[in-house]
Image (cartoon, rainbow, N blue to C red; front, side, top):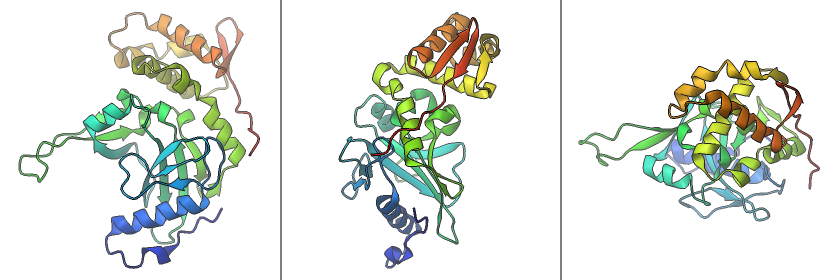
Length: 265
């Protein structure tokens, strides 16, 4: 995978945002595969498509690309808040590509995908409406909070300038598809994602139920309407076991499943 952007394509564009869009969209088209099925190349959507920038002609997954010249922080600026909230329950909501590149060397440093099943209302932050003096007075945008997304939902295709193996990318993608297939209810899925984040915070392959209980107050703040937090924790761990995300090793003890490499196509 060549990480260099083709700067010749940006000739004639004066706007920095237009130059960035042309360069990064071209790179994704020429070098990226579909993280779901491995197909290369992805298909470009027509210019100014309202939802996504790329789609896979084999598995029909769609992807929206966002890029910048530095690492993405904890928040990503997105479009209209109401539009985003409506997309969360829509079959047309795309997966996300995040691409970072070196401003001087014009080389890709990081390229990750976040599958759409990780987008729930809790990670969408409503911004203040534009002032009455603004051209679009009252318009309200949103941010995507990356901190609310489990690490399992951040799948690197390129990390620190190093390309990931296609089979490992596909395996990581497949590991959390159960969130999409079984949890159309956004509140239920939000609970499960929060418990997944807690398990990641523990930072161990094998962990005890008591270690998850230690985050009871944090989960209570996220879900103030639930007065049975420990019961809910056990329920979510059961769901994760049933979907092959983790194992029960003994009473009150759990182990995260390793990602098995998928066979490339």
